[in-house]
Structure formats: structure tokens, C-alpha cells
Length: 306
Length: 218
Image (cartoon, rainbow over all chains, first blue to last red; front, top):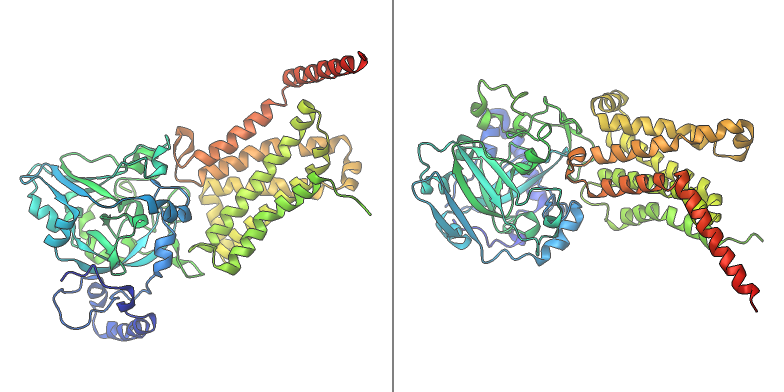
């Protein structure tokens, strides 16, 4: 089901999903797997009106999602990103998929939208700065694109590269970062069903300040892993460099899983402030997606592999 | 009636501006999606800016012979302290809900917060003794006590730099603004070097001499 053209007005109003919240709380008592179900993608193709929220958390208002952005390519000032991003051109846009794959290919972003059914996924987003949001994304699992590319047997990691356009992205003129932004995942992390290539949020195409036209969303990792404005996806046999890890290796590990038990040297990771809420709330292991992703790290010391 | 000088008006208006702006934003929904962090960051930066301006007073006098800022230095310092108080209050109260156990734990877990807390503690005696009574009472020791500001300012800059993403000491990441403050601090310290001061004084002397000579000709 292609869902990128839903007007905001058709999104379930807050009162409705709030009452659904209560319903789901009740349902959770009987269904032990409620959380799992809540986080799972909605089956596409259903004729029933699609619920906008399947997570028991309240959605962060669209205005906050689009006016409070960490996108250092534009600015280090979260509020400045939105206005600066108005000059950015998300079309035409190509995404190159290559490296250790049997079927390397460059896709126009329209082709990706047409080729892979767009799903709505409501995910928590936990920033390493100890704030969090709940965002209804539209997109498709990265796994589907990787399956199409057919990873070679030597492929172990996926490297992502962002667009480099200093003339449109003034933050890229700063000499203190290694532009372009890069990120990486282990191949099995990339293949996990939660890992999403997002092309929209709140039923509309992705705003520039949120990483238009296509970005990664890895909900169990700190937000900076979810690279924006992707132009290149490359499979590699060695662990790729990542921008923040290069900038400050002791603070930003390759894995960067949300983990309340591993303190960041400068921010408490035990608690977070949900945008729109006053009191801090405890941070959950893997941002609450433990059931879905804990298997990826079995036997690993997450204090060492932070 | 007492007359206010333009500099005096400027100092007071400018010093209240960051707070007025926050209040304005509070009423117009401009405190961002993360208001507590916004208040913490804004007040922290205001305090640091005012500290740096207070440090600019001496060179303005010694190099340019402009002495009026000396009269405004106390106001600059006290306003800096005011913003520091709001900053710390926002941190302990708004951010951590006065859960002192958590506040203390956070202070000791995070070096940059420890540094900020230490800077704040050091500022307190300076604020208390900033009044004439204390200046008269402490005499020479007053000046020595207030030299603490040379230490506090770089501590605050480091606190700020460490609060940003990246690695300040390797100049990678979000370092532009902290670097600007550090440069301002270093420049203001350099301008205090006796050699520079003497050179400036002799330049000024010569300029005055020339001026007098020119006036004497007709």
C-alpha cells in the first residue's frame, strides 16, 4: 500500500488514539505479546482504516518533530535547522547501492518509492542528548533493498553516506567535522525488520530538516545512527567509519545502542526527557526494543561495545 | 535627578535582554520543543558572555584609556551571577526536579557538570563581596579574591565546550562557539600583558603629544 500522500488531517486525532491507548493497556493484560505487536509493522493492504499509532506512547506533535532537529549539516542549533533547510533540494535524488553486492544499482528515489511498499511505523527516537520523541514514519525495511542488491558472502557491514552540498548545507562549511556524514551498521543489524529506510513522516514526504528525501531509522540506537539524506549504501567487509565516532571515539561507539546502563561521559543515559513532557522518564534497554533486537548482541559485552 | 550614561543604559538593557527574550518566548511558544534544555543553554551562554565582557573592562581602560567601563564592571559581574543562578536553578529544579540525590550523582558522574558546579561555587563569594562595604573591609585581599575570575572564566568555557558534541581538544565536532569564547578569553588575557600595556600607553602619550603640538602651532 502506497501511503506517502495521506494529508495530516486524516491522521488519527489525538483524542482517538489516546482512548486507543487505554484500550491497548487493557489488551496488554491478556496478550503477553502486546508490546511486540505494538512495535511490529502494520500488515499492509488492509481495507480497515489504518490506525496511526500502534505504540502505547503518545505521538510527538508534528511541529516539534519538524522544528527541533539535530542536523549538523545545516546547523548545530536545532531550531535553525528548519529555516536553513528550506533552501535544500531533495529532488532529483539518486541512491547508489554498491560495494560487496552481486547486484549493484543506482536508484532514483521515486523508483524506491514505487518498488517497495511504504509502511507506517511508529517508533521511539532516543537522542544521545537524553531527549526523545515518538514519530510515525513512512518507509520500507532496509532489508528489502539489501535483498534486492544481493549481498556477497564477504559482506559484513553496511556503510551509509549522506549528501555533500556545502552550498545548500551551510553547516558543511565547518572545518571541525569530517563531511560527508557517514554511518554504519553490522549486516545483521541492517537486515533486522525494525531497520527502516524512511521516506516520510506523519503521512507526508520527509521534510528537508528531517533528512529528505530518504533517511535511515534505527529505533534501538541513539538518533545519530539514523543517518539523513542518504546518497550511498555500500556493503563492506570491515567496520565502516562513522562521523561521530571519528570526532570523538571515546564517546560515540560504533554500536551506540540505547543503553541506560552505559553512561555517556557527559549525559545521563539512565533517564530521558520525552519532548512535550516535564518529568524525566527512565530510558529503556535498546529503547524498549529489547525483544526485537537483543539476539543481535548475545554474548557481547555492551559496556565495551558501546 | 541622576543622569544615566549611554554605556550604563546599554549595559543594563543588554544584560536583561536574554532573560526578557526567554520570557517573551515562554509566552509565544518559542522555547523550542525542549524548553528546559533551551533555558539551561541560553542562561548559561548569557552568564559566560557577561563574564567575558567583565574581563574586557581592564584592557579597554589600559589600552584605550577608556575608564567608564570600570564603573560598569560590577553590574556585568552581578548579571553574570544572576544568569548563573537561573542556569543552576533550571538544572536542579526544572531538569532534575530537586531530586538532590540524582543532582549530586549527575554532578559527580559527568566531569563537565562538576566543572560547572565548581565554577558556580567559586562565583558565589565574588558576588557576595562585590559591594562597597566588602571592598572596603577586605582591602587588598578583595582584589586578590576577585582575581579568581581569571580562573573561573576558563572553567566555564571548558564546561561549555564539554557540553557540546564532539571533542574540543581535538577540534572536532561542535566546537565553533566554545572556541570563539576561548579565543576571546585568551585575547583579553594577552591584552593584560605589561609589555602590551606599556606600548599602548606610550602610543597614547605620543598621540596626545602630537595633538597638543598641533594645537599649539597657531
